[in-house]
Image 1 (tube, one colour):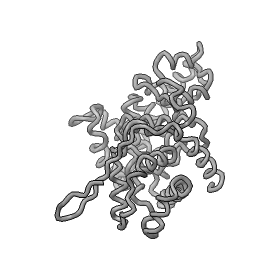
Image 2 (image 1 turned 90 degrees about the vertical axis):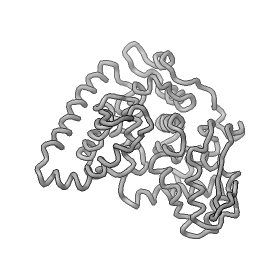
Image 3 (image 1 turned 180 degrees about the vertical axis):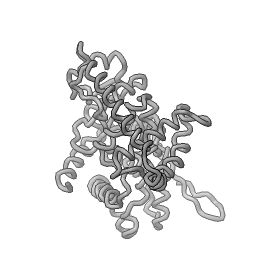
Image 4 (image 1 turned 90 degrees about the horizontal axis):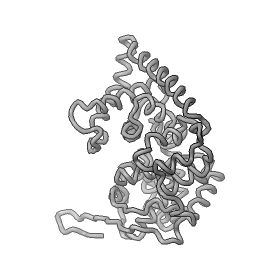
Amino acid sequence: IEQLADEKTCMQFSIRRPKLPSSETHPEENSSRRLDVSAWLQHLNQHGQVQEEYKLRKAIFFGGIDISIRGEVWPFLLHYYSYESTSEEREALRLQKRKEYFEIQDKRLSMSPDEQKDFWRQVQFTVDKDVVRTDRSNQFFQGEDNPNVETMRRILLNYAVFNPTIGYSQGMSDLVAPLLAEVLDESDTFWCFVGLMQNTIFISSPRDEDMEKQLLYLRELLRLMHPRFHQHLCALGEDALQMLFCHRWILLCFKREFPEAEALRMWEACWAHYQVRGTANPAWDLTPQHCRLSRNSLSSKIAKISRVGDYGRGLSMQQEDGTLGMSELHKEVFQEMQNTLF
């Protein structure tokens, strides 16, 4: 911790712990190499079906997916394609889903003037503001009048029509942008996004009770995994236990807390659902790692809740390689929480 002499006292946290000790990692860590083209093809039979789904998910969890085939593999992880589907069946599905997608878009474009007015106020105004500032450092979305930005805009607007219960809330553009950059096709990206929203429990919903449920989950996880940190928050009072500094971690699945390459590696590892039931929220798989990497830097002298918030936000982009080391203890605790809390 560095304290900088100035008119105001500043606290700067720098977290550098590139590798977890072997005692804290899963016993099968480093058991799989990255899934590249040749390895991916070995998982497919002559009809294009995935032969052993469990082994594939294990390989993705431990080794990740080569960027060159993410657009082909992610649709399986996001429940757009079935692992049992053949190449011909997937192509037929794409044609069917493309037709459905443009029917959704036609419904949006054929709204009455009153419907358009309400839609603009409730959805489109926010989408238009968000898409132009989402992932602009990514070359895929850079530049003025970038057609990919307009494609992302259409996907989000069409999703709001497809699922009016959720509609659109800030943060969803951060979730769909990486999908579009890897999957590329507009319709395919849309349906991958639908799968992402249906099969995960991170917050892309405006309801406060949803976020509170996630923070309850997080508080219990910290109580079991890192009692010292939990006790510190308890000592600070109810405001600290609200853990508002973790809001962005959950909302965007750590996307802004890590470099993009690591964030996407985390996402696909969690989407693989290896040895984990239910949630695919990277927040639950990775929060213990986030805290483990940072716990030695937690100062017991942080007495103000505002500084706890600064601490949480200060972890952004301060992690190094090795964050994905999954501990056996974490998996046991996670299963216990699923059985007791829900």
